[in-house]
Image 1 (tube, one colour):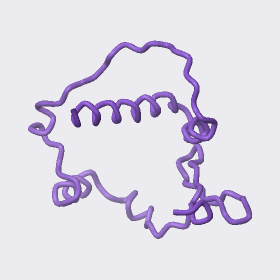
Image 2: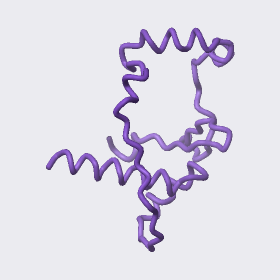
Image 3: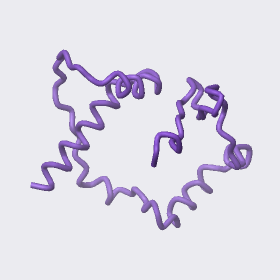
Image 4: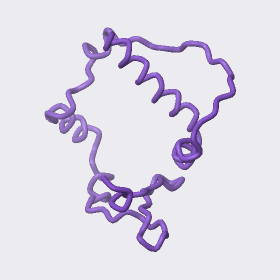
Length: 115
């Protein structure tokens, strides 16, 4: 994908996805989601849908039986990141350092599995 074809977006504090237009202005992304219908769903309906979703298997007690909670200690460091990388995470709001850590952890675990 060339830089001209790329889509630039950010998330507003309320969770609205904003897309940068050709004029440089960020506007809410057009959506075809029926938010009122989704908001009206009962917990039972959501649970029923989740059990039949082939792309998302359920998370029952058996699924969580072997879950491992990872809570290693944190260590404050000084790190230099590219401005655009840091900006990307900061645009997503509070918790950006935790998200950066999660991305790094995912990479670390993938490397460990790869051998």
